[in-house]
Length: 123
Image (cartoon, rainbow, N blue to C red; front, side, top):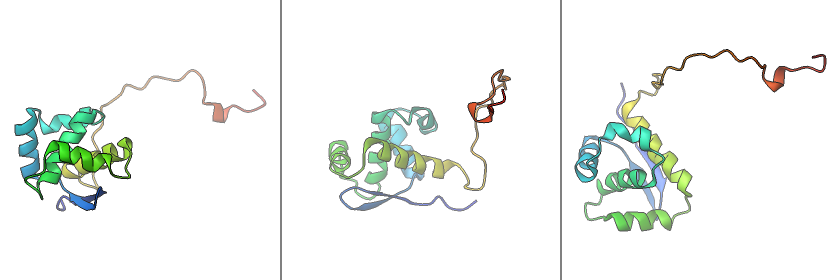
């Protein structure tokens, strides 16, 4: 397995983000939440901002959450861009790029109606 890659985000400048052990540990200490629960909470703005802040702090220990929020608010990224980047950093830390991402098994339910794309004029 290769080392966890850096993922970049452009705020006031380009930052290299990586979710290493230090950031994971600090995230759990600061938030009281388990890092492994992030995936199911990635759409939560505060959870995403907390993780982004912790990763940005790895290069600037003095950065406050409020300052990190201002960096995001003053950037060209919209909210979904930021969530996608943070989620990508999280995924890079836990999943080998060549391995399939684990998914919840879903029971197959037969579809009684064919998709519209396969209905012909003859039907």
